[in-house]
Length: 277
Image (cartoon, rainbow, N blue to C red; front, top):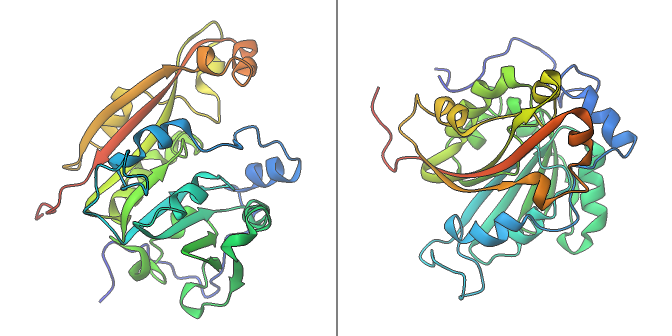
């Protein structure tokens, strides 16, 4: 019997999605040209400030969840974010799993953090992804949307305690958002939490600048609508004026005609007992 949550495919050839595919080619070009302004050298400030809500930090002064351990964390569209390094360093975390479509990003993360001892591995059960393993970390090279492919879904379905979405949801085409959210919920364990950052372009003189991306504008109301078909609890933790907080980084948006842009942080909690359909 096939898993109803898996994505069935009839393809005889299984492997990581080509970086020249429609979904990945624009990101492949960005990484090849080193146009990665979205990458930050420092750990995300909100992860430092609110991370205790999803994992107990080693520092007892910020630990509020000390009863939790052996936590498995998913980082979708991870790039080479150093957030994974912070998450990996916590004693309560059993494993961090980063998923990224562009191999160059993962190779750079591997080279920049040699202490994690990340090496490519051969795993016949995960042919749809190229796999890298290190100390309490797994990196999967492939299309995030393939995580529920019928050949690998049993490994990932309801297997993550925490999902850290550092604005990945606004990096994908808006037409994929509903599918993306359903993926997150299927990958998350009952009682698990998603911490998610959205970007909302609230006003502008050029309508096209408000619609274009990435990042693609996403409001609080839209987030609540995307998660409305499930019994999850959506909480807005904080929002901040991106123009005021990051004047240099946001310069290109002002020049394009955006006059107001905010980052919004959400905590999304899945019920401990899933509703029976």
